[in-house]
Length: 411
Image (cartoon, rainbow, N blue to C red; front, top):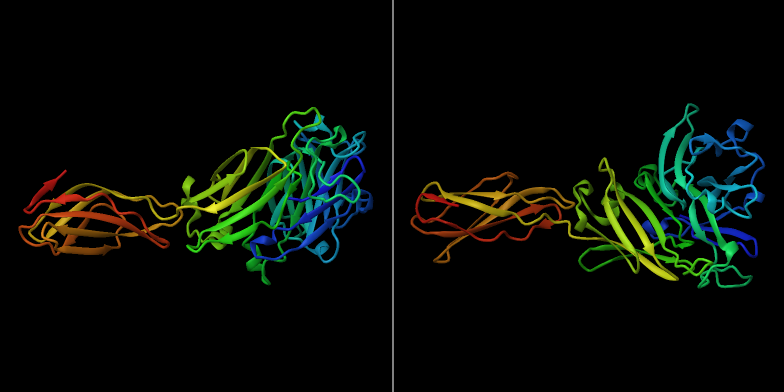
């Protein structure tokens, strides 16, 4: 989403958009041109070539273009060939749409032409998008989003540090805003296949400074963490506390490539941990198992961090429920199977130890209960346990379960 410094008081509305290049360790800065500098025509039907607006709906109805203004935002070279976006504003409102529009839902359909809409980020709430090829063979995207409840008070004085945010915003800094940025991720590798790995990455926020690229670290054990710095004014103009939100969509391909999670569709809550300095973070699998969602709510400011970290992705611990000595040298073990947490189970290792210290160990490729183990000594009782194997490692061992010294079952 844009990382921006804008001033309602000084009317200096320059939006600095930092691309999601932290995913590959680069930095690409794209400067969003103010609407006054954009082309006078913004709609495809008016003869503007792509990128252009196909339609803009407010609560399902086409907007009155004398009241609501949708402008296609331009970027400076070389980003202008790879990045586009739009801004929504309203007549009679100094900037943005105004707080009265916070409950409205806007649906913007935009033809992006040769710009493949891999990444979408911006100021807004509850955003959802659909990408497709239109009848002309151009790329297009439909974005459904609500305005963000913004406090635009960071770096709002001439010559001021852009990362300085007021403790309490001024009345004219409180606005409702929709600004979306659409990028083809041209910085992510030299091939289309490499850039397509970022397809579907999205973020929407009402936090003024949501910095990209994130700081990406890898621990000595290979655990990857993305750290997003966030800054905003602490209070609304009336002195009440501002609570920021951010909604992020991380496609499974990004989880595989960046975080090393082989089967993201099997992730559980502990597979991907999301923490913030303040507020609450919920992370969950998107319906359809195509991406992981991260929702930040209630963040307070001036300066906070949102950290997205790979958690435990090895399988859960199995549980032996019953054993049976089926012959002098063979036993069967029934068990509750392990559940994957980001890497599918490939098999089980069984280990049995007799009272005299005789060890029998075998690796089975089966993923179902029961499993058999041979090589036991006649007349010796054993204690057996097992653990699941996956591409990223082992589960913890199950608790030990006794196997009789003679033919028979132990519940």
